[in-house]
Length: 394
Image (cartoon, rainbow, N blue to C red):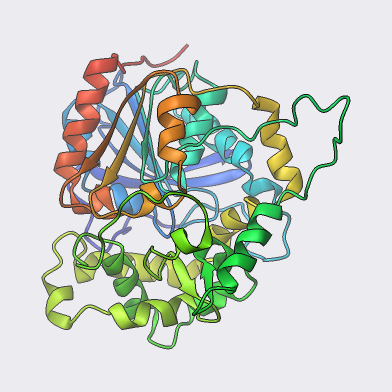
């Protein structure tokens, strides 16, 4: 695939597009900055949903100017990375968290590094980065998690030898939550449950308002530009508590995501005035998702409730993230609170060297696009505080 014209002229100077072949069964598309000289520490930036390596375009030159070799891949299921199946009925195992960790590990190795100098994961990229740091701290000696807190590894049943060792299905909690949300007035549905359905891909790939309008509204409503975002901690995962979140997180039951987002469509003037996602930049997302659809990206949500793939994580039950870590969110981002209690678990249980939990002003969910300068300053400060420098080769 020709990537020379990637970005339709919107990539910042010094950021290039290229393919890395033979990475854990994938041909991985990356954006790259700071590649002109050797010996630089490697910064790996992992995107979430529905995003791409392209979402890091404004951060990459800033980190490169500070001395890093910066790499942002299109993750498995996204963009121009190939080697994954976009079929709803395809096996989910390749999309498991531990296999996406292998993707990241293999990419670092393919680039000729034994360690990262910086690892950052946003949204779905956050659990990938968390498990990278937890399982291979030798390769990933520090980690920054954005928007999605890491609550810890699923536990093994404990002290059951003389009692009832029966366990509920892996998705039992999800089923109970779905029933509780459906019983509300009006009935509701958690967005992850919707995104796991067979029809979600076609709903979003071919929305009635068109893909361009859908993506514009989706990025807008989850940003600091939408005045309706006023996130705050929730007391529990009870349906009544979760229902306080906007409908793009806790949807009206029976509505598609395009139907949910449609009332929040920004005006033509608001779209024109959006400096962090211009019409030309939005066009890159429309082109990429228009070509691939969303199913590869949506496989991630189905992994969360798969019994076998969740059981795989229990190999690491009781382990914590023991490298220096930092959590960042946006002051207008509901992401840090969408899993009630997860932030507290990061403080008390799932990490041992957490340096801070911080919210970046003027940002919603898309921190790296909305506030790239503020984010880069914080990433570089964390690297200075923790000595996050690593060499090339072995």
